[in-house]
Amino acid sequence: MELDSRRAQAKREQIRQGALAAFLESGVSGASMDHVAACAGVSKQTLYVYFRSKEDLLVDVLGGIVASLDERAPLLADRPVTDLAHLREVLREVARVMITHLMSDDNLALFRIFIAEMATTPGLLAIWRETVPARFLARVEAVLERAREAGVIRDVDLDLATRLFIGPMMTFVFLDGLARPGEVLVPNRKRLDEVVELYLRAVT
Amino acid sequence: MELDSRRAQAKREQIRQGALAAFLESGVSGASMDHVAACAGVSKQTLYVYFRSKEDLLVDVLGGIVASLDERAPLLADRPVTDLAHLREVLREVARVMITHLMSDDNLALFRIFIAEMATTPGLLAIWRETVPARFLARVEAVLERAREAGVIRDVDLDLATRLFIGPMMTFVFLDGLARPGEVLVPNRKRLDEVVELYLRAVT
DNA sequence: CGCGAATCAAACTGAACAGTTTGGTTTGAC
DNA sequence: GTCAAACCAAACTGTTCAGTTTGATTCGCG
Image (cartoon, rainbow over all chains, first blue to last red; front, top):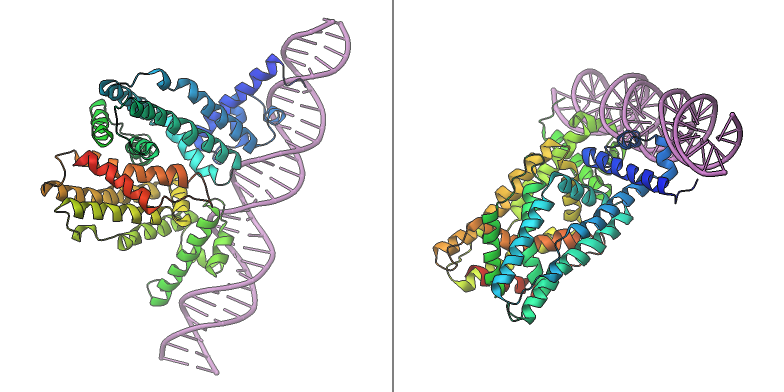
């Protein structure tokens, strides 16, 4: 089998999408490989031609998702933060994007999968570590660093300042989102802006 | 069978403890009922005398844990917060207790179980909702409310102010704790005090 | 002691499911 | 058209596990 051909890559992708749908729908252990195959519109055997095992497939799928998040992330590095109005605007936007993006049903299901499977699937643990702290937190921290260099915020510990900003968003996601599957109450713009205002008071 | 007798209650409790140990050790789906029975030092059949099903047992055990957390929680209602020094001291203590308590291996495992099983076990969902937001958040919020009445903090939105305080702690628990089973890096006192200081600046 | 309730160990049932095998069908390159 | 690679459906294997059944044993109370 020539698994590098264009056709093979397409099949791989087709399987990935079906698997993702199945996992999001019923969780990892809840989705049988028969069901995954059905979702992907592929025979069960073909699954095993392209992926060694269920765990292999899971890691591959989630790894792909996480990598693709990078592209959808706002280009924080380009945004000017040389005065307070700029910083305020950037933080507001980050808050909005975070909340609307992370609190979608799909993403909440993804979180559930990560947290549940991380303990027993080393590959996922590695993906989470490389991503959430290393990429996402670092990106926010970089914004704050530039703001600090420009004298917009005080000389605070940047890691803690980042956590103070991310934290309230996490309360929305984990306390409200995960606890109410199907009926998630997403905070509105005004509420998020208030969080930013409260936050700015701490760091300026 | 007289399931209300003293003896029966003791057996129930014995089973609960064994089940908790088994669940923490291997997760819910990872712990077979045979293993639970072994951990409890009880025959498998006795398990089913006292609990209708595995799900029943799970809900009962976690419900008990969560209820018992109340007793271990610091008595925030008694603490005076009529000046800044008081408030600072109370918040520092809350932060320390939260972190040392929530970031223990057992509690991280509990979180993992809750998040993973909540989606498919309605009983757990109810327990989580009644507890985490209703009890824990409310308790911190009550402290802030008294501080606000005493004029120690500004006239801020109390829900958001609570989230701003809880949030950074959640980053430690969820970003650092859940991602590094076995090698959790707990933030030290100084670091937590810095968080409190940063926080106080936002609300005073 | 003696009796009934509680408990035990162990085998069993039935279902679910990851992964494999088989044997037949489609696809596309030449 | 032909041939091999890719694919498919379906049956099969071996295992795991929740929950049940059985039949013997222990415990506590009178």
